[in-house]
Length: 108
Image (cartoon, rainbow, N blue to C red; front, side, top):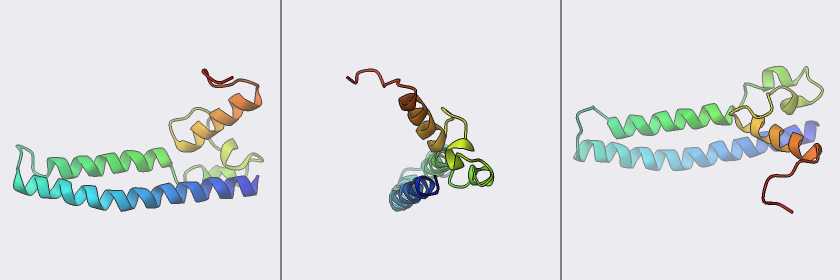
């Protein structure tokens, strides 16, 4: 369980790092567009990028489930709700469906 949780955490850190690399470039372009082509709302494109980044951070949910995982024998997967909107909830839903013998539609 601990190795699985380490792998999940590593994957989340990788995704967060990739987001940061992309985010700075997209934010610069959005801010440039806001400066060159102003709209009725100050910084509309730039702040839209920041909102999307915040949504991604909420979905990735880097540390929230860690507060409960230490006390749950299932670790990170036990500390989240299967099918929840975050990454761990989606992973748990996939694991639960496969262990119950259910396969995603379209697979043999």
